[in-house]
Length: 527
Ligand SMILES: [Cu+2]
Image 1 (cartoon, rainbow, N blue to C red):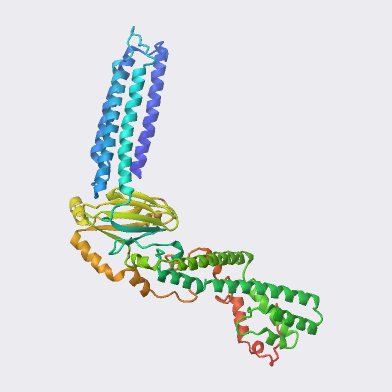
Image 2: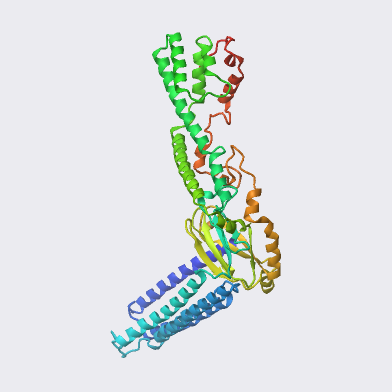
């Protein structure tokens, strides 16, 4: 810190000193009777030589940077396409540096050579078609060559591969990568986002996964039935509360009439909103005013069950799920079961991507949430992963991890797949380890994975428990993700998580008076 401050201080003082020197020079010029605009021959010659010195210092600095950091600063490429793109990059650098050295040498040399001399008039040279043509056509041709070569390489890397390339799908989401190997048939199974469940994160399409997605829609706390029930409960509660409040207001003094009216309303609404253990009709049998007052108290303790906003969210969720289940049934109807085998032998791999040295790989990329970018720096491959579309890249790793470790003399070195788009708060940790194995090692690993094909893993996974949100809706810390499903959770004040006021309600459930109409309740204060 102190060193940095000292350096800063020296720079500031240096600038002040230079400013002062210039000022002194100006003043002495004045004393000598010389105007500021009058430049002597000596000054011109000095400037010319300084330009030359500056050029040499600039070249030394650039050459030093190139020697220190290399052409690309990325180390040796570990794939065949990487070596080819590095060649292209080197070609670019050769052109760039040639032009850089040529133009700068001319610029500084001419400033030095043609420094103003007394009695020599500059040659007036306003235009020359030939020269214009040369410095337009030559760069255009060079650029065309660079672009054509680059496009060719890009098309090669992103075009569809033949049968021989091993197919792997990389699925990106905030904030990790999942690899799907195409299995022994080297055919990736089909997928559909609508089939995404906690058991089928990648939404693979088989008869089984379609049934499972339909089952998920129809069971658990967030099922269509459950949402409908919640909405029905909310509608009924509101209706009953309004109707009873109106009756009480209109017939406040006539206890008997009030009671009859309330019984009628509850009968008419006929809603299943009565909390367990409490029967409104029983309560209403208790002599006045306890009966009606208890009903009102229960209603006011529970209100509001759903706020307008929650109710709206539930309605949106219900319409979304109703549409989704309709589409799922359509999908089931048109499903081609003979293609299931493509998906069933796929192997899903997290955390580490294993590749075989010398084999060509065709990667297809998908994104679940936002745009990510799959970046393999050592293989010189990078492509965006975009929600709703599939992108592709091919490469052949040609240096195994162990060989690279030996080359770098670093036993901890590993290849890596990173996300190269700032895609959210934890973007920095969106990485996957890449290990390139020799063929025999790779074959052994591949054999070990045969027990965990998609079909095997999928049928072994337990069905989601009733009433619990699916794992896919949970965040890493285990809490529910902030999705629309938030709307489906019980709002505060509902039975699920009793607050102090609700505890009072709980007590009422135990209250023998409320549950037994024959007993006369002691006089209570009604809120
Ligand atoms: Cu990302």
